[in-house]
Each structure stands twice: as structure tokens, then as C-alpha cells.
Length: 194
Image (cartoon, rainbow, N blue to C red; front, side, top):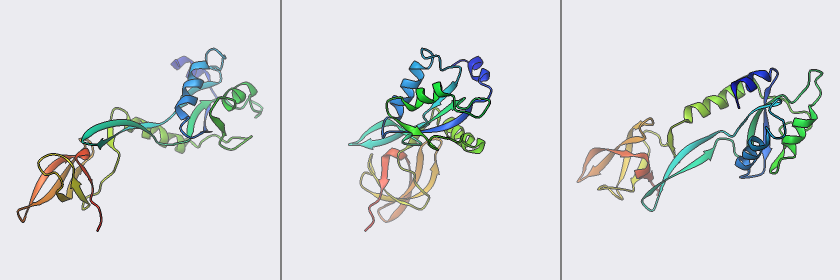
């Protein structure tokens, strides 16, 4: 999508479209792929599926996967209504009839997202760009079990969290004395409560 196309759609607004479970990516790919061939780029500026990259460890190996911020939804920046407030039928049916789409949020008379809502979503996307986040979020004072390295299977208390670097400072009891250890998020898991 060129900047020229986006700016030429002067009255485009953001709409939420509900999809079948785990079909968000397929819906986005379909709409992106056929937008030009169906001559929808005069109505649709962008299709957005907000995601972030998360890391987790299974069997001692670090894995990355993409997690959707809003499962079951894609967001479309489009010109859904004409100047008389009537629905533009071509883009309406193009989106509504795409495989995997349940429908527009709001039914037969969708309301655009508020500017504050879409700004919040776009900010989430921008903040997540190029970053990995742990699958699990931790808090200072929380007890964790170490799952990797020389302190394997020991429990400790989180003293500090460095989310930008993905590191935790954990206080571990070794021979009756507490020792601070710096670990990566994926090297710990929540301790089981007894």
C-alpha cells in the first residue's frame, strides 16, 4: 500500500472485523492479496492484525512464536460509508464474504473505532515491533523456579526486572545465604505454590 493510496482515501476509518478462531492471518492475507485485483484499494487502505513475538522454553530449548493481541479480530482502515452515510456495497461484501470472516463488529451498521481506541492499538503494535517478550510476565517479589544453568531447580525471589533486556535479578538461597543471580526470562518459571 503506497502512501498515495492511503492519503487518497480521505474518509477512511478503522473498523473491527470478527473472524473465526485462528483465521485472522488467513483473512489478512486474503484481503491483502486480492485488494488490488478486485480494485478495492480505492476503499481499503490497510488491514491490521496486531501481534507481538513471544519467547518460551520447552525441554530446555528457546522457542519464538507470534501472539495476537486481539484473537478473533482484524482491523481494517477503510471507506465503508459513502458521502450520504450509506454502506459502500463493494468493499462491504469484499470483506464480509472473505473466507473466515464472521462479520463487522456492530452488525449491519458498523461503527468505526474511536480515535483513542485505534491509537492505543497502533501504539501497542509500534511498541512490540522488533522486540521479544516473554510468554509469562513476572513481578518483583514473586517466587520463581530456575529451569536452566548451574542453579537448576532452585527457587528464588525476583528482586529486579529489566523488561528491555529480558533479564531478572533473582535472589537465590545458597548454603543459607541469599545470592543475587541475573537470569533471562526463559530461564525461570513460576514456582509451584504449596
